[in-house]
Image 1 (cartoon, rainbow, N blue to C red):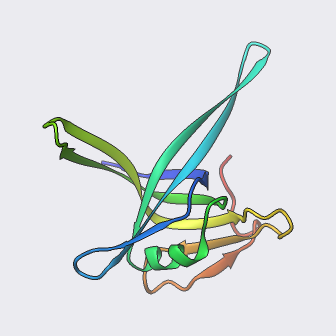
Image 2: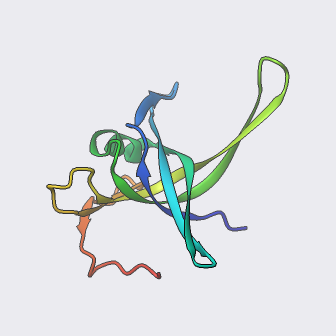
Length: 138
């Protein structure tokens, strides 16, 4: 089975940091993805919103490096949470669990866009990426 997500979006709010009982950090944020498409001669746009969650070292890095307005590339997987609400109804939510996050644009226009990869693995050094180093297939 394959469960892989690759998405580019803009943060809609600042990240929220929480801690698990083990002391490990989690960081949660939401992104917006805008899709433009043409119907006949008219262009239309639709927005989609996704919740993202990161754990461990990745969560620690994200909590201090990104904020509302940043554009990021997220590579990760989908996870479904299920619970029963106070009325006894079963609820469900699908979110993206981030495995790596690449910052591709900061919200302020006076800064030069830069790309930065924040890997999930603890033993991988953080590194800046040039557009020459990374080719996107679209």
